[in-house]
Image (cartoon, rainbow, N blue to C red; front, top):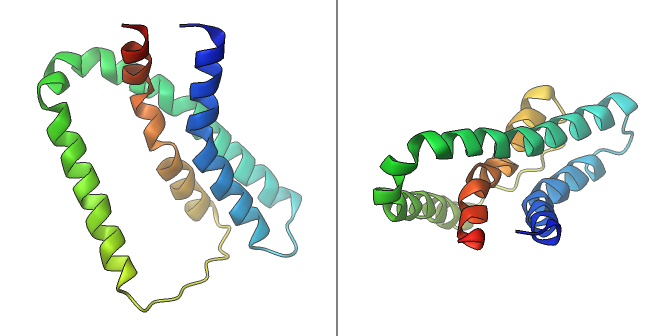
Length: 127
């Protein structure tokens, strides 16, 4: 795999985190430098750490997960889809302008979960 492919995978993995970070930053009018640094550090750190964790988890559990990977994917997508359907029928309109450490931490984690699987995607492209 060449540098171009790795660069494109990295950009693709970072797009959701970038979009959420921009939206969180734009949701508050008087953004302080502390908030900017918190958002950038949290999202950037998770985008760097998660592929590394995924790589080592992939090496360790490859033989176990390969047999049931399609069922894991099915379960996760079903769970996410059910949540989206439930939210679509909900009448709750919420505006979240919270820039607390806890909120940014959870958003950073949530937007970088897909980077855990990057090892498998690279292996598929290489094979």
